[in-house]
Image (cartoon, rainbow, N blue to C red):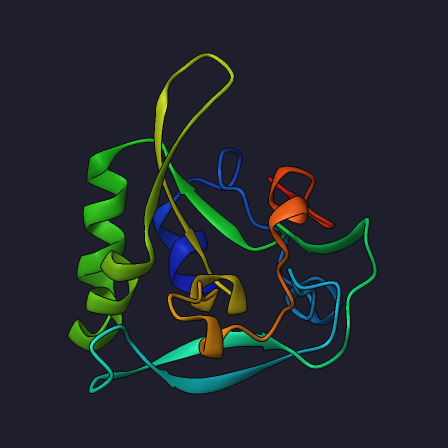
Length: 145
């Protein structure tokens, strides 16, 4: 996925670190995580989600945008999708999200690491973190974009 992105988006504007064994091993998650299947809201369909493997202390950076592909044009995004096998293109469409630059220019972004599988719990029993009402206003975790 990363190599295809680098091939499609011009080197001086793409958002990924240069390819090397060191940079390609960079992970967005800064805490231990595992990928597990989980049931979605209706309880029948399974999907993949990211779950922590340990308690996370307040103030800990849990994820940063290390492998987020950014597309400044719809044409580049469509070229990227066309260059992928169909099943991966469908996943990329599911994982993509909008952002704006500092100049309010639109971007299409997609995390090309486990960040694309970040889950949200709908039912309390699905949550793998303890969430208390008073913490909702002052979250103990940080994310960097």
